[in-house]
Amino acid sequence: MLTGKKIAVIGLGTMGHAVVSGLLRSQRVNPDQISATVRTKPRAEKVSKELGIKCLTDNVDAVNDADIVLLCVKPKDIEKVSENLTKKGALKHNPLVVSIAAGTSTGFIEGIIGQECPVLRAMPNTPCFIGKGMTVVSKGSQAKDEHVALAKEIFSTMGRFTELEEKHMDTVTGLSASGPAFIYLIIEALVDGGVMRGLPRQIATELVAQMTLGAAEMVLTTGKHPASLKDEVTTPAGCTIAGILVLEDGRIRSVLARGVETAAKVAGELGR
Ligand SMILES: NC(=O)c1ccc[n+]([C@@H]2O[C@H](COP(=O)([O-])OP(=O)(O)OC[C@H]3O[C@@H](n4cnc5c(N)ncnc54)[C@H](OP(=O)(O)O)[C@@H]3O)[C@@H](O)[C@H]2O)c1
Image (cartoon, rainbow, N blue to C red):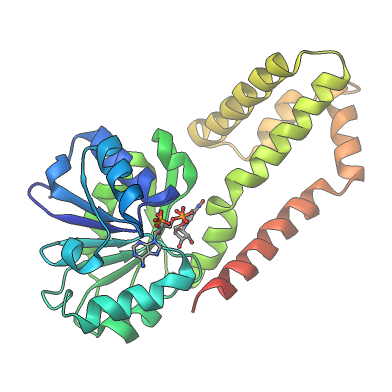
């Protein structure tokens, strides 16, 4: 379905880069199907060379003949960017608009660009960079299943994909988009534990990272409840249950759950 489709990526920063890299790596699109934008000419030239795609500083030029417009700017810039595209008539051919901005509703974007364009809200995460991302998409008022199918083609090139109702998107942001940072913090802390016991930091980091990868794969591939997988590791009177009790004393479950709750609340305040 992406064959021959023109894709404009507005805002080729961290996430825009991840999306374009994923698309190119998958070979489902050719570099000449993608045009991207950034703010400054030197960065446009640098990115253009790096990725082999057209990178401009004029959003209107990038969007004019696009079938799909990916808005990858910060939430605070969504209003200005959308207004500018609308005023200059760059969206009058009604392309599919996909915004990845945190806390920014499809209704807000529809209110600026008009009711004709189908709008999707997507929430990817940084592991998209290495094809291990998680992206959730929700439909705006004019978006249909065929539009979600297009988004699935795009974001599946960089990991897993699912669709949810828009009411869940701030929670998704606080969970799977902020989540990598929470896990890095946990990884760092576990590594410190190994270092405290005398392991070289590099070895401890490899041990923890591979263990985290394996544990996550166990959850995804066995379909077992995490509690059941945990029980399989905890021998009665053994070392694992001893460690778990210390973590429970530190209220690790509620601390992590409240972290997600707070991140989700703040996500909802970032845009509109
Ligand atoms: N980072 C994450 O983990 C993550 C995860 C999921 C979703 N998101 C969402 O993804 C979006 C982008 O986040 P990010 O972390 O990728 O931010 P970022 O690295 O700061 O990238 C933003 C990009 O937008 C460009 N830009 C700013 N104003 C522009 C304009 N008027 N026209 C064209 N380009 C413009 C910037 O250009 P310059 O490079 O020239 O400054 C920059 O390349 C945000 O809305 C965020 O909520 C982020």
